[in-house]
Structures are given as structure tokens and as C-alpha cells.
Image (cartoon, rainbow, N blue to C red; front, side):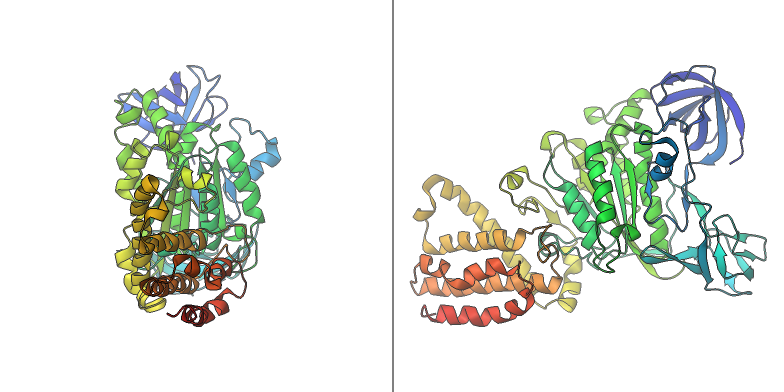
Length: 578
């Protein structure tokens, strides 16, 4: 990027620097001071330019040089993104560590993609083909997927030449008749959404293999979900499970302002995780963006835009992408800190007045779309929210809930009872359920929705009965209501509880989820018949089929056992006279 002008520092207030003598555009990248600290123009006031700097500004003095690059904050998009670990402005952390050690000095930078590595390029177009922006020109093997090399949006023309072979990112692989050189890499401004043909309805579920999510609160491909929860409720483990098991081909994980020890856990465990679909390392289809709480707040504010731009790039190839943002609360806190230094009018709890619009702007970039090259791709965004003191009424949680369609509320009380995933089934919800009904009916079972609604209704009845139980005890209830409590307990302990660390229980296909819940429903129906015939509840609960249902989820032969369960239940209940 060529220098467009030089100015000097006039004022420094933390990460916010005011400069004079340059005439940049909004969101231009500038280099500040002798150390050439990277920053971004966020406000223009007369002849003064307000810059947010992505690094610590300690020691920067008025009078030091400010250089305008004339270009906005961009990310490099091309082969080599997968398996990479970046900071919030796409500096590769392993490369910086090799240069500097564990603690990176200010002003140190490196390109986002490796310029020395050669990639095997195989063209999918030929000389004379007419191309439009976003069309695929060739393929490169990368990680666990095929990287589809695309023409940048806005570029079009007829192919003059195209070559097959090994190329670095700086070498052209072809040329158009208008002189445009076709490269393996392109750049894109992070604050501008990448274009697509049309947005499609979210009517296909993102299958996660987590029973409480898929059955009770499903997320659609291209949908938005929020996971709010206090400390220790399992946000990180849930994000890891979604990364590992959801049927998205690409995972982008943005660790935005999380504690260093939590981010260390992610950075050490993710490279060791195995992709169950291919048997290769999970990092082969993952991009990690790490911006811990001790890193400068300005880079934290940029990190989610970096993440969503990389996700859009893989969506444009026709892939389903899931983006984990952990957590958007820390991102909002970074916005609040920068806003206060800009002396803007504060909104609720000191957050800037534009908090809601920034959140919606971010979530709006997700969706299932028809890409410029023709195929369908999607970005599903799962944003973890960390409300202070677990208070869901605070502004970030409330504004997020107005935007997202799925709310997976993690509950500290469930964590204390060792119930994981600690998703509260009474406060969580999914607004995608009606749109997904047809898909479940065609691909899983005709009565999927009836079974799901029965489970939700049973859990709701249990909640109402618990208030009476706390007053008079369960023994004072009629047998039928005591049975409702027992069946709800089976749903909670057998179905909703799921171990992320058990080889069999960690993932449950949709067919198995349906069969499992149907078996519990069948037990409930037979038990009600037995109650009507005045069979004592204690005898019903003591039946072997009840305990067998609880053990099933840990058995490798679970699918076969579920097929034989209705016959076994019928036999045992017939012995009770049902």
C-alpha cells in the first residue's frame, strides 16, 4: 500500500490518537509514530483525524509522524487461511512468535498468508471463457477441503491465458484480455460485506449432534444463535462441540476479548481435536482468531469483522460455514471504551448509542445465500454472550436477543447440578422450528414435531408441578402427576444430559435422537395405561426397561437396542397386566 500523505500526532488518549496534516477517508489504515503502529481512521473533525490504534500507544508523543496508506483495513483471502491462528487484524501469531518469542513487541507485523509456500493450482476454466466477478477459476487442495480460487467481485472479462501447476500467492495463474492478472489471493475490506446473488430462506437445519439443541432448539443453516451464560456454564465446551460435530464444512472461531487462560485452552485443544468426518486434525477446516483481554481493545473491535469476512470468503466457494464469536460482550466493551475516549454521548450502562446497530450489522452478514458463482453457501453465527453477574437484562444480551432467532440460555443452577450441556429448557427458544418442520418431516420422521412438542409440554408440566412439590412434597400428588415428574426426569437425565467426553454419547444423529425420544414417549404412554389399571407407580419405575433406557446412550449398539426397545417394553408392561 503506497503512502498517500504524512501528518503528525496532535493528541493521544489511550488507543485513540488525533492527527493533523493528512486528508484520509473514513476507515483508512494509517501508521502512527516511529514504531509504525497500525491504526484505523474512525472520525474526521475539520482538519483533524481521529485514529484508533490496534496496539499499545505507550510512549507515543505529539509531533510524531502519521502516514496514511490510502486503503481501508483489509484481510488477505487465499490458500493458507485454514489451520492458521491470527490476532484481531490478521497477523499470524505463530509467525510473530517465531520472530519475537511469546511476547510480541509493538510495530511488528507479518503478512496474513505465507508468500513462500507453493500451491498446486488446477484450472476449471479455459482460454476464451467469459468470466464474471465471484466465479471460480480453479481449485487448490487446502486442509480438509478443496479451496476454490475465485475472481474478485467486480472484476470480469474473457480469459486470455490460464496455467496449471505450482504457484506462490504472488505469482499470477492467468490473465484476462482486459489485462487483469488472476491471482490465488485477493484482498477485501473487513467492514464491507461480500456480495451474493440472493438470500435464501433458512429452512435447512444445522445438525449439531447435541440432543438438547437439535431436538428442542434447532438452528438453521445461515441462522443466528446466542449462547449467554455465566462463568463455568460451558460456553467454550459447547462451542467446541459445535465446531467438531456440526455439519458445517468450515469453522471460524473468534476468541474476542476472552481471558488468556481460556484462549490458551482453545489454542491447545483445537489442534489436537480430530475431525470425525475425515479422521484428519480438525484444524484442517478451522481458522482461529485470538484476541485476548490483555490485547489492545481496538484490535478486539476489529476481530469480529476479520472473522466474518473470512467466513464470507468460504461461503462464496459454496461451503457451509459456522462462525463462533466468543464473546460479543467483550467486543461491545471495546466499543464502549473507544466511544468514551471519543467523548461520544453514552447510552445505557455507558455503551455507545449505536451498540444495537453494530450488533445487527454483524449478525446481518450471516445467512444462506446463492453465491455469485452459482452454488449455495451459508454462514451460521453462534455468538457467546458473557453478561456481568449472569444478568440477562443488561444491554448486550437484550440487544442480541432482539436480533438472533435462537437463544441457548446456559444456567448456573444446572451447572451446579452437573447437568451438561447446561441449556435451560424453560428459558431457551428457537424461532426457526416452524420453518424446519417440513425438512424434519421429510428427512427424519413424519411425527418428529409431535414428539418434540410432547417433550416440551412434559418439561413445562414438571416446572408447574415443582411449585406444588416444594409446598407439600411429591407423595401428596396423585399417581398420574407423579408419573409426569418421573417421565420429565427421564427426559432430563437420559435425553438432555449429554457427555462431551464420552466416545458414543458425544454425538447423536437425528434418527437416533428421534428413536430415543420416541422410546421415552412410548414408556410414558404404557405407564399411563398401567396407572389407569391401578398398577402402583413404584412397580412401573422398577421395570428393567426404564433403567435400560438410561444406559442406552453409552452403548455402541444403541441403534440396534433402540429398535428392540418397543417389543421389550410391551413384554414387561404386559406382565403388569397392560
